[in-house]
Amino acid sequence: MRPDTPVNPEIAACGLFCGACRKFAKGSCPGCRPNDRASWCKVRSCCIEHGWWSCAECTLTQPEACAKFDNWVAKLFGVIFRSDRRGCVERIREVGYEAFAAEMKAAGRMNRPVRK
Image (cartoon, rainbow, N blue to C red; front, side, top):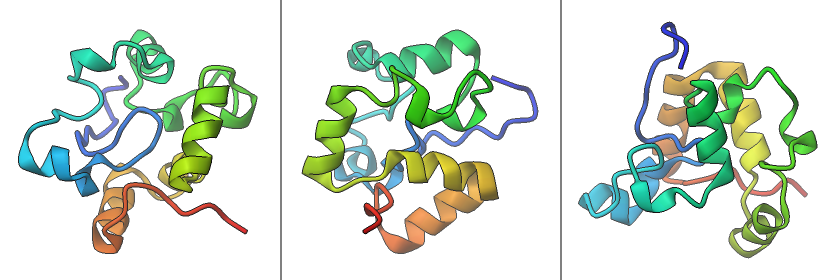
């Protein structure tokens, strides 16, 4: 992680906002980064490997061109939960981690809704 990057444990590597999750709020889930049971997540592993808090810091490719970010599991997740992880990453890039977290907290949402 870059030293100038603010760390917010409520934001997952893929851009989802864990702060609106009931399990996170109850303390039964530590969130993305410290969750050893999430070792299956290629996005989380990639971010840890490169020292990024989330894909918003990636300099290698855009989310839609990344096989780790935009795989079949992610697409299925997006359809089932009507989420827009790419929109979350783009918003983090636009406003930063803390402003994104504040927006999501105010909206009470884990993700940005899919655009129509």
